[in-house]
Length: 323
Image 1 (cartoon, helix red, strand yellow):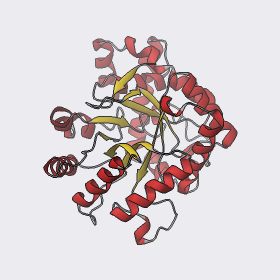
Image 2 (cartoon, rainbow, N blue to C red):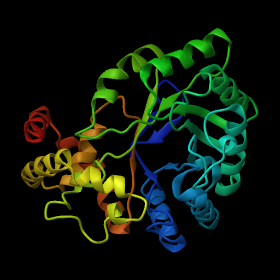
Image 3 (tube, rainbow, N blue to C red):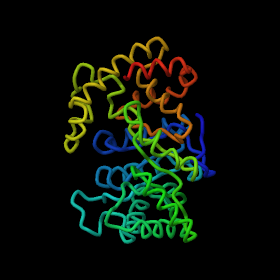
Image 4 (cartoon, helix red, strand yellow):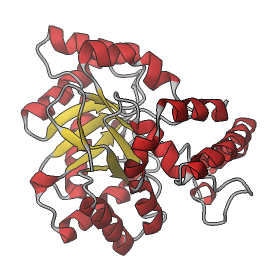
């Protein structure tokens, strides 16, 4: 495993991390969660990603039980949560958003579900137009001061809002955000590569990127239609299925088919090619993996060994294929 600093922060995360969005409870039970977390940890993964809204809080419950059973030393791994959507299917007004009340209570609830005394990383899962950014920054700063959160950040915030958070923090001597968690893959690139460029340069922000395989499209498994056991067939994820089946999704599937020939010549899977491509970006601190089967996780972890094959010439071929 390789490790990168979380932007300018001193924390070093494994370049490949493991997240539980969609999978825990929906596709993986406790036994399978133990296997996946254990396999990832044994491979050197030290960051496990979660959120209050994943499976209405049950994803964190399952991860917490797994971490307890596996007995990893607490100082050897990092665990995250995210706050905004709430942990209920129909949250009340005080049970969602980025108000001070919800941030504080959601943090305590996440710690209880994960069975930890503090969160290493805590993300504001989306911007909240109903809450002043200053209120959110102050709440996050207080959690850091209390030792309940070590690093706080954002997820899918516009660059201008993140810059505003930094300005407020610096002006009021509060703790600024250290990281952002955006979507990033061969098809979704503008925000990470362009919009956030000033954030890396001016504030030293790190990134823990999600959906590196574009909702599974970059595995190549949708070339002949949607498999019956695909996550897009799960109840509640109809929007994900629409993303695969619409015109843009079809174009991405066709581009992935072109990428397969490049991957074959390099003696790797198209999945590993897509993950290694994400790792080529020096502003990516960690790529979050998600797997519903142990063999998928092992294949994903193998992407790091393929990174050296992505020469400048190969990167040009990849660009040509996806266009």
